[in-house]
Length: 215
Ligand code: AMP
View 1: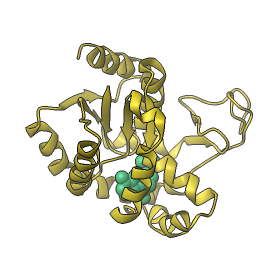
View 2: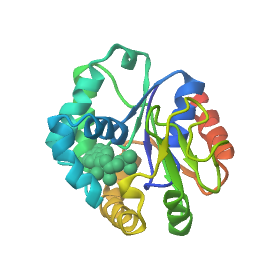
View 3: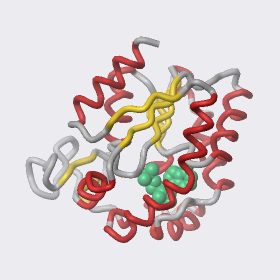
View 4: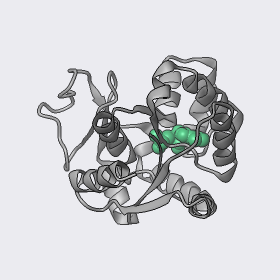
């Protein structure tokens, strides 16, 4: 199964994508995670991407597309995948179609996680990420057992530079600018399913999994 997960920053995309990947046994491809790995290993791509990311802007397509093509070259993708954070623009949606076309693949379903701005800002400004394994926590909604320490691997937790309130608002504005056309693209292709994401994570996950399994 090949799934695209859309939704504003803070709608719980990362949390849902990780859980869906476990439940449905699919590869989880997050362009944000891939970029952050490049930033923390200070690769040429990471050095270039960092400035855009810290401002809440999109990293130029050329950089992201090359990174995505490399990821699609890995063998786990053949068993199906969840794309999280890509595409973000119509241009990227078309690029994705042509990468998949060349591999004889197509998207089966696109989930759009719908969330209100108040919930988003509350979620993102409290978000904590494990430096080592990428596990997600929240200062209030999902605190780690020991403050600052990952429950899963013992790694240290940090707040992403782009999860500061001013950057969150910028990221939301960038998202809104592009998303209407993107949703229209997938609606026209009859792939789009909208899921309300303001509920608790486990309820949202169940709605998504039930719908995906019914395909
Ligand atoms: P995310 O973890 O999905 O919120 O992404 C964090 C940041 O990485 C975004 O604010 C962008 O700067 C960059 N990014 C992630 N995915 C993409 C993409 N598909 N196109 C351009 N930039 C991206």
